[in-house]
Image (cartoon, rainbow over all chains, first blue to last red; front, side, top):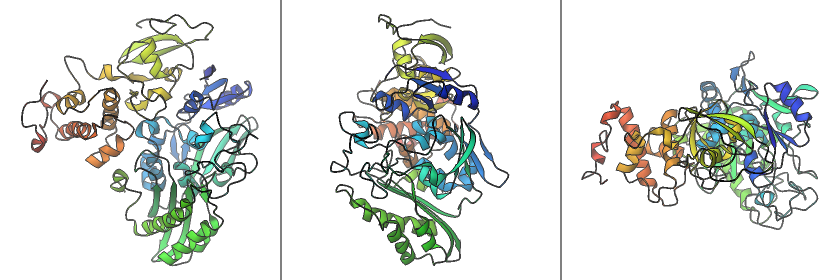
Length: 341
Length: 197
């Protein structure tokens, strides 16, 4: 780790001011990803701003029937929160599918949005990587790319966003609350993370100095029919090769409303409104689900080692929608999650 | 307050490293340190306070050997800075029991031979204590899932599982701590002979 200074910010405004007063400053929530990147010399901030005392850890109901997750609420406190378990079980399930209990006790909800790709070339200082060092090239294209993206890629970068939680937040249409040098603003979840384009070094649309203060969930939680299906090389403590957050509102056998988002396939959580439109108003059958899956994967491109993800994602979407309809097995073979609806 | 130090124990001070004060409450005792801000909680415990029960395995949050309890919740001390824990109540393996009075988990690990080399054991036990504090895992499959943040290169998982289940079962059966012993709540699992010391 490089040397740096550390201050514990007493409040949000002070944290933002402190950030602006330093070159290469970074906010630190739980630190589970940032400190790892600093140990690898991938991240080299010269000043860290602690957020523990900014009062952002609360989870509270909103007047419109929604729920606000404070940016400093831990992943564990979020997943086990009675309102999240009852009203947004899809979110609870996605959070519990990620990381380990120790990491979930440290990692914050705001930090989850800010975590960076686990592309092995991004972590390896000895190889070119446009995300780490703009203009140096992409080692994954033409290299070993089994875990890489199949949707929304560019010639500069085929990295994936690693989060499980964010896939559920995309499906649930959360809103990101942000505070910065120019005051407060909100960002629709789908607009928060970016596609790589020709600037893969930018993961999201935050402006310099801006701090995530919370996440607002709309009232509609799809608590009756949902599924977070995560497919990975082992059934616990591994990143997704492909994951699917499926949420349905059913009227008998007819789909009244639908949400569909994928993880492990793109530079951002991949929600597909066109596929959702193909589900709405249709019977909840395998044929309907297959049409939606075909829509999601329409522009998919494999890069060799990861080409299997196209068919894997297609089947995962069908299975997740079926599970959401029937409320049968919830996730992969994770017994803990399956036994706790 | 136990002692003040500016360099790792037994080592010369690091030249020019800017330090800052931090007070850590560990196993009930307050320790005041002046340390560089990049000192992880794990390094503060091991290198500055001689609490070497907490182990450094991967140093990247993947193996769980460094697990300690912060305000009763298990975390990876390698992925946390000491300066982030000014107001925390930290419990390490040294704080869970004493040589004369082992904690129920420590006793269960011995009774069930839940380790081979022992390097991951302090992290396993702190993690299992966190799991018990959480109160979520009840079945063997649930314990396996919620212990997945702790790796054991020796592969002692089956005995670790037995040890953790025993403490959970004893707790659920409402046995007072003094009567907890191998197989007390699960006669069918009782060892055929007394556990060897």
